[in-house]
Amino acid sequence: MINIKYKRTRQWVLFWMLTAVFLYLGSREENYSDEVFVWIATYIVLYTFYVVFCFFRTIYVWFLSKEDIEYGYSKKFDPKLRAPEIIRRLEDIDIKEKKRQKLERELKIIIKEYKSIVGSRKKLEEERDKELEKQARKTKAFIESIPKKQAQYEHGSISSKIKCPHCHETGKVRRKVEKHIEESREKGVVGAVIGRKTVTDKGNITKFYCENCKTPWTA
Image 1 (spheres, helix red, strand yellow):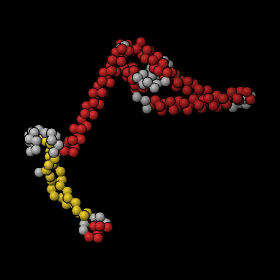
Image 2 (tube, rainbow, N blue to C red; image 1 turned 120 degrees about the vertical axis):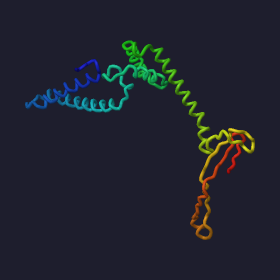
Image 3 (tube, rainbow, N blue to C red; image 1 turned 90 degrees about the vertical axis):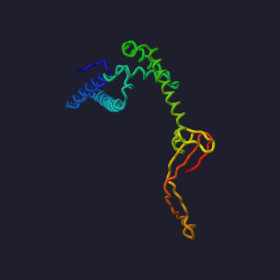
């Protein structure tokens, strides 16, 4: 069933009405006066522009997320997603005043018509604050984890039972097993000119690093 309260439905109803008129004019075989011909030509030009608009508008909407669909555009509109998205967009200090006013009007309508679903503006702002705090905690935790991850990558994991022979601290030593690769440049003219190297795999080597006294050693 067609519901013309949606902007998208009205757009397509108008499109098919204009198309019907266009096809009707194209099917008639009669000589028009110059004045009528000018009106028909103008109509065809405007119709062409509208067809192009509908085409690109449809493509644009296909790529929209649900929270980007504005109130009254189509039945895909979801107030639970759209209202928080408007709150988020209004945080942008660089937003143009005209755009801000449009978003404010849309938000008021959504809160008025869907208050049982989205709640008040205060509730929406509080939920946004909680979301920002959660994001801030995640960001902080990620930043704080970078040195630990870097240390683990470079020196391996902490071995809780190993005692450092230098500072005698236990539980501060990192242990990492690596391949012991030895490279040697070939001697003579070939080695000097070409720089050919010989690579020798001497098995595994265990590296230790103390977080307390910053001393590395191998075993």
